[in-house]
Image (cartoon, rainbow, N blue to C red; front, side, top):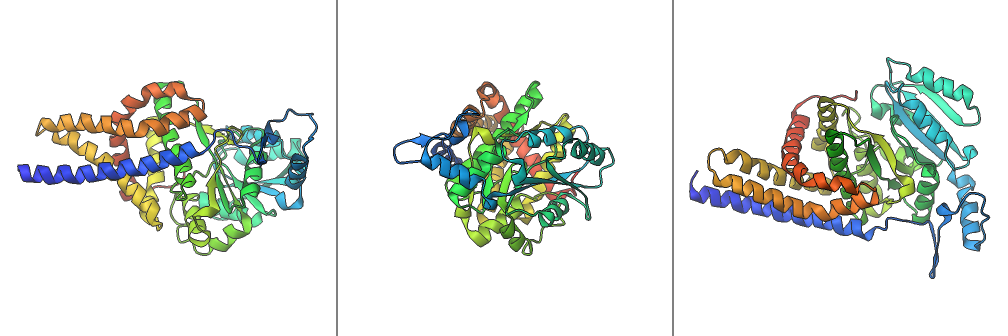
Length: 405
């Protein structure tokens, strides 16, 4: 490799590094604009912490009384949609967390679509339905195949104005519905995204998973805060049902295994603009889902996530994905090239350090919010591994056929 070629490559890599710095810097700025303790009710002089008021304490402030009344109006009925496949070990915990919601049980319905499970997912759900008749739980057998078809079927079966979506292996905080609905109404949105935390984080493998996923949640929140949402997570979403039905006819992604969340968000952005989508950074809205038990399961999941990238149409989402991929590919290039030209290993280490410095502020912010500060000690080791993981899953997702479970 000639010196001229090396010089050109270094310049190209420096350009991608600068673009990565600008991109993550913008997301970091957006995340820091977010408060880690939202309230749905505020005045010019103070904040009335409606959701933090102890149970049994009477509402005294007139604004709070009015807002509480609006939360229980007919306009706020909610349908919670869940696609489930082979989740007999998890579905009861999810249903129990829905049963424990602070939101009035008469104001929300739960629709579970069983996507051709080969275990007792449907039977466990049915048993819960029998034991808890006061909860409006509807159980459907999937008419189509795959998560997207199941969610679409649930959407068409829903009877309420607002729709919330989560996964069958999730656990929800007690005020999840109340908090999400309050913020959604106050800000007059079409779609609301919420935080997702992987759990548990006992082994080193689990800790690295949680930290890596937190970086995605941080970018999701930060990008939405600056008016250019580029990611979302179907484990914690809320949107307007009528709007979702209106944009569904424009979707051409139903045959793609992944992306029930991302492609829907693309259509919301296209038809209603970036201001119609927001992110709620609130501890009462954190949904927990499980870490992957094995390395094979982890890569299968992440490959499925990246497989949808080639079908994106939103240029901001595409540009962000390319910038992240190319910067990480540059770091991998330095490592591989080091076997032929030793000085490239120096560049490899320097660029890992550069990436760490760029990523640190946004990761520090999100780990503080999620109360996962102890994971930050694993950040630097993860930065050495992360570029190889990104490149591998990106190319595996592009060229391999993947399916949901």
